[in-house]
Length: 269
Length: 273
Image 1 (tube, helix red, strand yellow):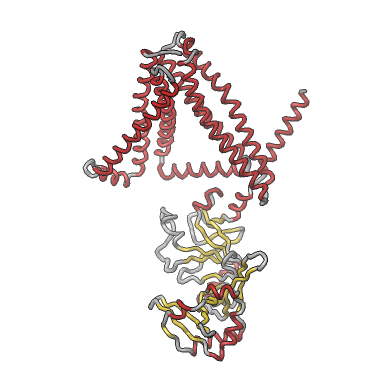
Image 2 (image 1 turned 180 degrees about the vertical axis):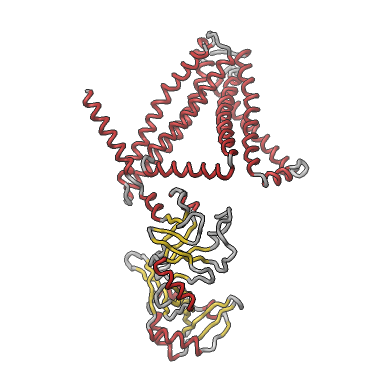
């Protein structure tokens, strides 16, 4: 049943995202076509920069719409009229949450790939070839400088990104789930919970920064930073490790909140 | 229907292919400004547009001469052969190519360990602030000239002219005539200089003379010409050792020659100094 759930989730995403990315590809192709007429005239510059601006706006819209659709899909499928059908399926709430989270993550990653492909289209030809040469040169330099650590950095980077996207969705899921406890205006309540979370995180971050700034010597941070300044390779690993741990902590908080609310406090419209 | 689809697909494929063969002006400009170390790992020779430039001996390299210092030099970025063109300006060493395309000039700052963290370049023997690479076709002549001692028998100076209609400025170069050169040399040799800052700080600056080698390869900044309040002229040189200006007052009998010499300078330039 979980496989069927994946299949239906993916088809729901493809119905929206594929046309969206085809439009973006079209904008990229148009932008590249404009460059066929490259010259020094003001008219060309206006048209060229307009096409680039349209492409950038399109790319940002694609990325944002994917996120918005992922959040909306979670809400409509589990907390509106559709929820009556969803919760009759032989699937646990945990499975519902993870299926939606994983498919949203996959959709977001494919959205990034689609945007990258569109960037290749808009720079098709000489510029694209040179951009790839520059990219592979930088990677080669990184391997020359850091050796096998570069491979580890790449793995850590992808783990950080994947966890980060997953935790972001889980945060929104938790806000929506908590918002359902309100009797009226549940969506507004979910938005309010998100802003409250944001304010609390800002306060915690500020307190943390103050503590670190005032007590950095007592906490031994001076020695730590000095040690890390002599070990830049370790510093980068530590950075990724901290990001992964923070994401894992976020997941450990947001998932149980969402899961528990759906299991025990579900109140469909 | 099928034929129509095939035709549309073919046209589409042709458009895509034609796009792939078009270039980009900015990329072409970057390619034109990229030069390469002739041998990777060695920094004593540069190849640019098929011309090889060899490094001149580093003790006090002469300054290449440019008639138009504002625009004549071309920026060139020297890289190893494996650096892609998009990274040439961030990874490359910046150098100026002279207008006659015979010299590449760089400062040791841009060749510092900041840009060569692996310490590939030998900085120990640098005694001056600039490094000059010379076209290998004239390299032997230039080195011999340096060994014999470069002479600067000519003088000249830059001056601006302005188009009244468009307001655009143009930088020009004036070469002093034999009579004017003789007058300048006479002032330097015969007039007793005064160590003072009065003229330099209070009078309008007319022009900065450059001494130029006979083959116009090299130049060096020479005296500044100032005009005093009662239409007399001064040749002024700044002294690094005393941190003061050395001022030579032009004798009255040479005044007419200096008036003629400096009339090229726009009156606005005279006013602004």
